[in-house]
Amino acid sequence: MAGVGDVISFKSGVKGVVEKIYDNSVIVSVTENTTNLEFEGNKTVVGHKNYEII
View (cartoon, rainbow, N blue to C red):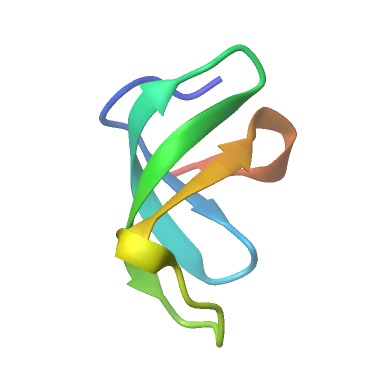
């Protein structure tokens, strides 16, 4: 499980920094996005099973 400040990758091309941790997910500030996805406010929620710590 990622900690606050850890850099993670998800969705095959999106990287971000963990800002807050919840029981089943984390809030991520998106820093790099090589996909066609758009994130409002450059933040998103990612489930623990859906990311890798870099």
